[in-house]
Amino acid sequence: MRLRRVAWLAAWSVVNVVVSVEVSACGPAPKPPVQVMVLGLSGTSMETRQVELTSIANLTNLRGGVLSMTGANRVTIDPNDPLQSQGIDNMTDTQRFEVLVKDKGVEPRGHFIDRGGVYWPGDFHTWNMVTTYFNFETAYGYFADLYGEQDPLLKDIRGLRLMYFPEFRLLSADPLTDNALYYSPLQAFMILPFKTQQRIPFAMNMGIIGHEFSHRVFNSRVYGGVGIPEVWKAGNLASLNNRWTGLPINLLRAFDEGLADYHGYAVTCRDPIGGCRPNFLNLSLEDQQYASQRDVGRTNACLTSTLKSALESTPPDEWVRSTAMYVYGNIWATALLQGGLAAGQEGAMRQGLMKAMNNGSKPYNDIARLVSQNASSGQNFTVEALANTIVENISDTPPNQSELKRQLCNQLITRLAIDCNNGGMGPCRPGVEFMKACPSTSARQNFCKYPPE
Ligand SMILES: [Zn+2]
Image 1 (cartoon, rainbow, N blue to C red):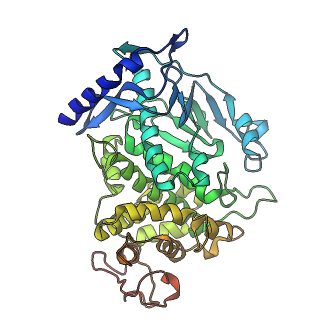
Image 2: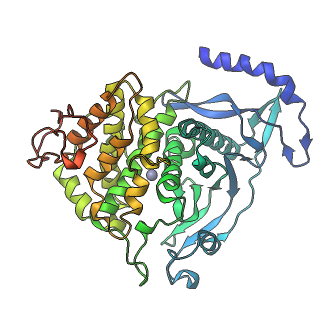
């Protein structure tokens, strides 16, 4: 409560500046920063809250430096469409957008009421859209701080495209509903219409937007920002037989999801009222048991033999639609979180994860290289290689030397049942090829059973 009152008071000091905006014929277009009301989480419910948008260029059209929205798009993925019958993998990103987006949509028009320089949404969709924009701006702020001003890849997370309530048919006559997603083949975010969803709308859940934003970050840093990365390609054309199969592709997709949950949680920590929510999905997902399996804060996440065989043998197109992919990804997420917490270095962990995806200056390996160097066959993309690459890129906050690496190694080795000592049961030892980036003090801990059951 107190925090909210302070925000209101702080806002008064800028009221005079904002009040004198020109109101164009198309609705309010105040210059940033703009004071708006959004819906934020408080406990398990939503409350109205005044915030400041710093990147918005046109409030009425919900267009700004971070994100531009279009509404009423129609997107159809359908192999029976003559334009798609040869597959969509081999198109350029621009061609694919042209072919799949059947109706390019229109700019939305938010309806705002100016109350002393604070813009109040006038209807539900405006509340939803402006809250969405704010959540994207928050996620952008989180990642931009980790990137740093000098990072050349920062441009890839600006000027993003969002389709609001599109009619999105994905290999089905019925449009998808009740979801928020980053749809990589179109390099666009989508906020889908509600149908049965009764809980906190996805776009109003800051953690979910943080999760989706993380996919864009992963796409940019690991795949070079292309809509369909080489290793995903379906192999349905003669020239495209280099798609990864089995464990490598399943591992890569699941890690992307786990990392997205980890960052989604970290973005919620930017909410001064709601605070850090490791279990942010339980507010929005109907299936509470599944939501709890994706809780980044759960301390009992361990590989099981069922998950292990699912990872190794589920066909990739089935895997990406399975809950197992997310639950396996969650094991990585919990290892990252618990490792950072145990070392008291969450910030250094997040920074290291950016480098692990793509470290630019190349003294070490990174995931981008691990993927691209093995693009023709994923056989070297193993659990151990991925874990080791991450550890390699983690640096402790001085004066610590290797506490963060050690804690992370212990978490990864234990939770993922990494067989770093050939025998499988013992601790990792220095010089072991699989986990060579781990300090010699790394050891399997006793919170997971091994061998997995
Ligand atoms: Zn995801």
